[in-house]
Length: 463
Image 1 (cartoon, rainbow, N blue to C red):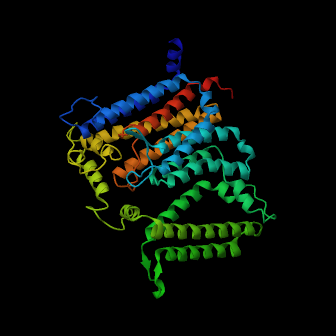
Image 2: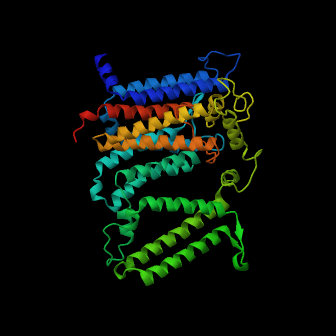
Image 3: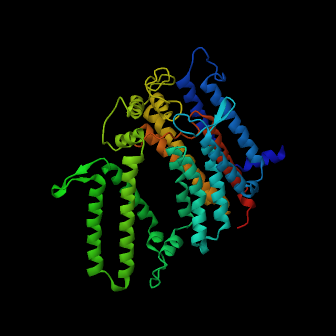
């Protein structure tokens, strides 16, 4: 008993309190949305709110057990946990599809989503790998193996397919950048055929952040123009070819500057950077255009077009997003009051999945703009707390894992809220600790409680 009290006393209480408060908001909202007057008891497991209470109880029990396990166990068994979740991701591909995706593993009358737990195992494995790898002595092999840890579950999730979870896995790349892991070794290996070049830092390694935003802008433009046609100089061009024409023109302008105004000693290096960027841009634009026009499912194309404003279909493909925005807006400043949501109630079914992916809608409708400020502030506080915990860690393993948790939480929070207010496509990402669902609740609870345990033992780690 004394040991248990000691563990609890070292836990970061502000973070724990914030998580428990989110769970409270979540169960209140699920109860309001799914309320059945014939089954008013909150603990009636025949109803969704009763099942959610059960999932919360199981999750907190697992979290308590995690606090009793030595922190070093998670590091020692990271590889085994990672391999088991990869095997589950393979097994789930042979299960019957649910809502068009093979993402659920049935156990009796229940089902779990292995991809949710794969986020935890990938975070643990990535943290252990980075801790074991001397980042000051990076080479092509170590960086490639680090990327493979992220890409393996990404490929398996893409085969389900589950676009939302796949997007969340990209959050781990930001963690690598925080640890100082660049792509210099890979770029240098590609440039090994140019021995005359002496790069202290490659362009990509030095300018990773602007290059990343350049990719985002280029990808956005590629999607935006994929379904369009243009007629410059009387020649009919597809949107992709028109964008390639613009990129070629810009590249020629830069080529002129390099040839006539650039420093002679940097000319060769700048020409290679320009050529590499140009070829990569052509590849990116062509790939996105081909995938969008030939491989993307009709409903996926439709969602992207709706978000980009390329078409309107308020009562068809854009129904969910349209109704979600209407529900959020109907709450106005102070909201309609608890259990008085009309647009987003399950009884009216104007907002499908209002207890899962769109749970922000009934909360916003009931508590209004003021309630939204409180909820978003709570999420921002939790994220700030997680990143603060990450920065105070002595162990690389602890720090990397903490940043992984923070980035996963941030992706879920930002994309889900954006989805509910029309700023992001509907891709099925739950709101942490609030959306109905056992897999999501357990996965986020386990993820955060492992972080709490690691942080509680940070003073036991030597620098």
